[in-house]
Every structure is written in C-alpha cells, then in structure tokens.
Length: 305
Ligand SMILES: [Zn+2]
Image (cartoon, rainbow, N blue to C red):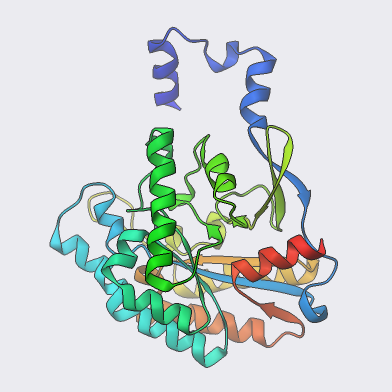
C-alpha cells in the first residue's frame, strides 16, 4: 500500500480516494469471475473432484531473486532429489494422477523428472521461466517468457501444456491476454471462488477456465521459512492436515472442487509427506471422489457446466 501511495504522489496522479468511479470500476473489471463452471455432477456421477498440484520450484526459489548461495540452492535441490521420488511413490501407490507446474529452468535442470511425470500419467503445466514475478515485467518480456516456457516444456516432455499457474500466483494486467493468445484451456492462479469459473476480461467471457487456488490450500504459508526474516514455520503438520481435511470436507458437502497446491521442497519432507498420505487416505475413504489432473477437470467443466 505504501508503495502505491508513493507512486501516485510521484507521478502527480490522483490518489485512490480521489479516483472517479470509472477508474476504479475499470481496474476491478479488467479480470473478473464470470459464470460458474461447477457441473451438477462430476465424472461418472462423482460427488466431488480433487485436483492435487505440486509447484516444482526447486532451485528457482533462489534464482528468481538473483540468489547464488549454494546453501540456499541445496534446499531447492532437495525438492528434486529427495522429495520427488517420495511424492511420485505416494501417487503411484494411491493411483492418483496429479499436476506439476514447472518453471522452464527447472525442466531444463531436471528433464528426466518431467518426462517421468508425464510417463506416469501426470500433467506438466506452465509455471514461468525462472519463477519470475510477471507483474514486474514489461508486457513483451512477460509474453516472450510465457511462450518460451511453454515451448521448453513441450520440447522436453513431448506434450504441449494446456494450463498455467503463474509463479507466486502473480497475475499482471497482461497475463490473461497472453494466456488467451496462447489458446490455453485453463489458468490456476486466481481466487474469486472455491469452484471453477469462466474468466471475464473487461466484462467479456473468454472461454478460459479458472481452477481457483487459495493460500489456505497451500503448504507454503504453514511451512515456508526464510532464514533471514522472522518468518518461521509455526504450524504442526497435524494442524495443517486438519485444515486441508476441513477444506476437502466442505468441497465434498457442496459437491465442489478441492484443489491443493504443494511444493516438493516443502511437503516432501518426512514429517510432512505424512500429511498428504493421511489426507489421501481420508479422501479415498469417501464414496464418489474423482481424482484427476487440472487439465482433465478443466475440460470436464467446460463440457458439462
Ligand atoms: Zn512456484
């Protein structure tokens, strides 16, 4: 907020409380939630859909800010080396297909990991080039990076990505137009609903499906840690399981979508992989739960809502 005020003052621009109605309406109306795409019933009569996703940030968590510390980079390397085999084994044991959102730089560092994911029936989606903050980029740079990221993933896996999760869910005023130009099926970076919806651009339907995320359904806010800031993990794995279960139970009761975002270098640790394993046990114990990749769920919503 402080930065916004300084910018407005520096440019001699009007401050938000001075804006005419047309201005704030225009800002709010740029990217908006349109019609709900929640189907009456999910695939094969299922009552609820579950989309598990992993943002495979690995070393780009450090590289994105220009970091070069081998110590910090090793925390990301853990994601590829120790966490991914554990996660893939759990998915295989439970028969669940998941979505992995992978920065292109990570795909280039670990091409075999991406190929194995695809070979095992999982989806690989766009997650930026080097986990850049797209809202800080000029439009042309954002567009070029998003397109190059998609090309890179396709070259490595042999499959053209159909969906994007922007790095850090950072969504610039240009992101939607770029995703539309690329003909993507879905985005999974916005938060206007619990259930899928069609994204509107300046009030017009885009045909693009939003599979909404939320920080509540993300492992990072509970477990993330920055050595040089006061942020420390302070939530027990059992408490995180309680929150995730409650989110799933709510989705089940409403016949909606439960979408969870995790990070291999966060959730792949021994004390935390158990949260996911217990959550999967809980969900698989219910009748009529459809587990699928983001791509499959987005397509189903588009065809059946
Ligand atoms: Zn990420």
